[in-house]
Length: 300
Image (cartoon, rainbow, N blue to C red; front, side, top):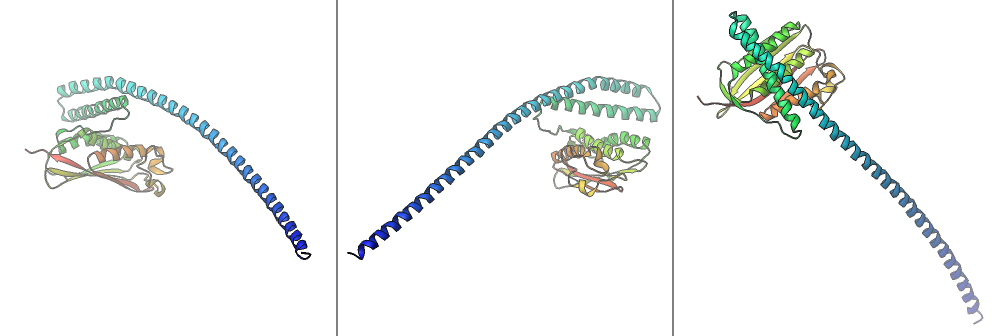
């Protein structure tokens, strides 16, 4: 007993000491965890306030964008509506002059004016129609027309415009037979006006060449191939990967004034015809835009 009692007291003291140490550690741990939870709650609360504030700004921005979009549609509709009146007058007088003049060259000039005016009227009507319904998808308005004959009407006004601006214009047409097709001539015209207009805008005292050909496919379908080649300012390698993006403005060359929007529109039109569009260019050496579309033949 004399030996055991001191050992018991020593063990009891050691146990009490360990218990106190563990209690302190537990208290410290609870304090640290409580502090971390409080800190985390503060951070979450701040992020919640930030998210709420951001949501309010996004809602306000969305409302502002909707108002701007509505205003833009009104402006577009008003402009398109007002432009139709002078275009109708020009078209009317062109028809009157064409019917009265006897000189073949003058007839050809006023015929080109009449065709260009009719095309602008159709495009204006499309703009007016789309401005009324922002979510409306672009569709093909098909009708029967002779491909080669329609191409001549499209190319002649562009030819005269290129020559007047000091450029040489060449049309290499490999279409031998004038096929009757069922397609959308207006959108094909849009492709030529966009692509040749882009080439003309960035080519001075140079050469613009349009190459056209057709390829018969299986069934009542043909492929219509078009290349628009210019010797203008070209596109840099950095901008080439973005030329088909919305509202893209490049840093050099042809894209410096926002040509990406025109090419984006051309891409959408080509895809309506189940076709493909591609572009090759080199800075300060020129650009080649190629597209191929599917056209339905009409049985004679």
